[in-house]
Image (cartoon, rainbow, N blue to C red):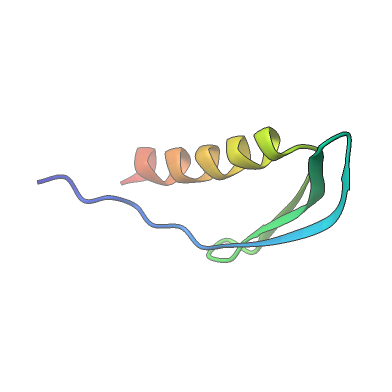
Amino acid sequence: MEKKTAAKFVIEIDRCENATWQGSILWTEKNITQKFRSALELIRLMDSAVTMEDKKA
C-alpha cells in the first residue's frame, strides 16, 4: 500500500476582492510563505507542495 504525504498549511486571508480570496499561505514543515491572488492559485500552491513531497519520497 502506498503511503500518502500529509502537509500542514497556515492560510491567512487578507481580503476578498472580485469574488475570490487574496492572502498568504505558510507551509509549516518547510517554513515557506507565498502570497496568492485567488482561491484557485491557493489550491495550486497546496497541490504543488504535496506533489513535490511525493516526488522526493
